[in-house]
Image (cartoon, rainbow, N blue to C red; front, side):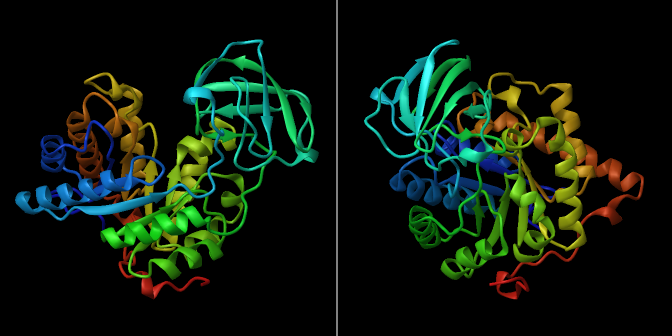
Length: 362
């Protein structure tokens, strides 16, 4: 169990960012019910992460709470290369060129981290940037360059996530940057490590070899992971339904069923399960959740999620403490309903707490 908050089984995982790294905000979030604090290794400096960990530990000790730390590795997320001054504005109808290798950047010409498979491309193949906020259509495709037309435009910045559904595969092996980040995070004493775009049992072995004392969570973000789901659940200490990237790698209407499959597989194999992304997306601005968000949270609890994770809501949203309060209220209501109808037998039990007992492939 990840939750240590009285009267609640399902854990609350919150992401730290510019709005939530201060002592006062951390005090408010921990009082409101945070169980796990997420450090995104894709963002922030090591100095900021070190200072944040120190503050989390101090505040948790003062509150008499156990608050765990999770390091989220960037791993194989495909990203845009640099843009002049770090940003550009792409308008519908404009032409954008993407290269398979780093090039001298221009406002409408950059590269992506991982190249495409040319044989899988066809005219009008979509390139989705920043979880689909920007949409390009491929007009010419070669091995070294993609020539695209902007379909849905707007501001874009260096390093935004890129997806070309059906035209990419997840490369094998732990990137050296992630190995270095993992050693740093282990030095901070984190309790859990999340690996983005986990796709094979071997991924667990690579992370576990560097961080043998941490629980390792595989993030399900690619069709390859769904194909290998039983083996991933068997190998990792837990799995995360990372809906942001998953919803651009597979049709968004398939994500709810994928979530149910992942949660059920984790329950069957007594593994931890975490549901993440856009749980309270509207509360980046609003002080109240939408009715759909409340239903989404409650249904994740009823389907057996061990933890729910928010990202931008507490990383850079306007109301990080309020977000935690709302999550707590909805979770408690769903758990009360679970208890009333005798549905608690559907939750995963006996979850491993010692990664050294992992029986999967190493």
